[in-house]
Length: 417
Ligand code: UD1
Image (tube, rainbow, N blue to C red; front, side):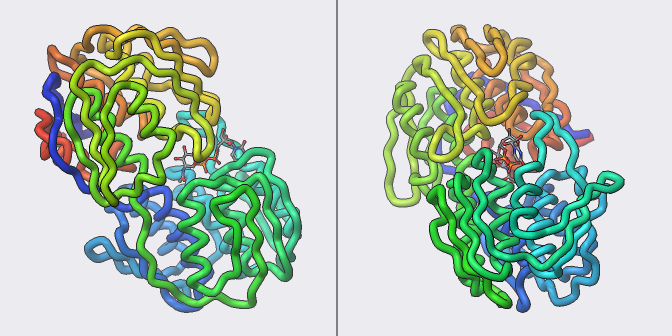
């Protein structure tokens, strides 16, 4: 298994180009199931999760071609509506195929994803929503068996789940009649999915607000669609710059996707400059402590919580970080403490007492965003070397991160084993 070696303590500087958003790409790929003509996605990131979704779609008979950063998906060859356990268990986002399968074929058999490192992550909202749309749902042998012609309905989500909003939107586009989904997620990835579905012929309004209205149509065509930039990747690079007292610009991004995050960076003492699709963050001294509460969009993204914690470990003062989206998302804490961080955990809150600097240590990645946090901590660490093992987690969501950080002046390398 590969490892990443970092000798930290160097301020990062320069410009890094942000790739297409993983969390937008995965549901967009699933939405291609609905198209009676091919869908071509541009700005697709080369990530393990994208390859896993492609494999799953291929398994169902979908034809795909991925060249450069463009992927064409043709659903006309689909001959199976089953998403097998072996593929779904590797990536929870595989569950996105349920909505489009039942919407288009009136039947689907999709393995339940099971738990993951950051909590039990149930799918009850997805299933309740589909039942409200008239699907018959049975859980058998670890699989969700769904059947029935869907009809429009009103449904209020218990929590603005990103995945449930996307699954239900994809299911409802071909339901008979009008669907009103309330208390939906407002993340930019939802609006991106709605934009592509509309370009395929769907009738959707309200994406980006907490009420989405969908008028069912009989069929959907193809689309050519540019995936939005990855706001989490942009945030991760900016944090690496700020944490090392550097001067980093992220290009090809959308500053409107990071409102709360950029304010936190300002509160921590960074100078933020926005020019079109570029964000520059400059920090001349150790950051100041700030309190963070993760929330659904437009709040502070849970997917940036671990990375900002790494930065705040070396801040002046004490920060309180509250995780309110996931039940168990502090996997990075024990490893950060091995690097000299001073953190107390109390349920879903962490008290982070800033120390003058971190020190390098061998550490282990446990999930995608926790791995990014360990990389940032390694870059901050003024003495010693950090060796991160299990880096396959990071390859799920960041494309060649070590090469891009090296381009910003980091002393970082991947040891292939
Ligand atoms: C998506 C993102 C993930 C991000 C998360 C929150 C993708 C591929 N992944 O995950 O990176 O961290 O949004 O921004 O887009 N919940 C239920 N029942 C359900 C569904 C969710 O209780 O049926 C709970 C979850 O356990 C969790 C919370 O709702 O505590 C948020 O989950 P959700 O928004 O659904 O996250 P995902 O779509 O899985």
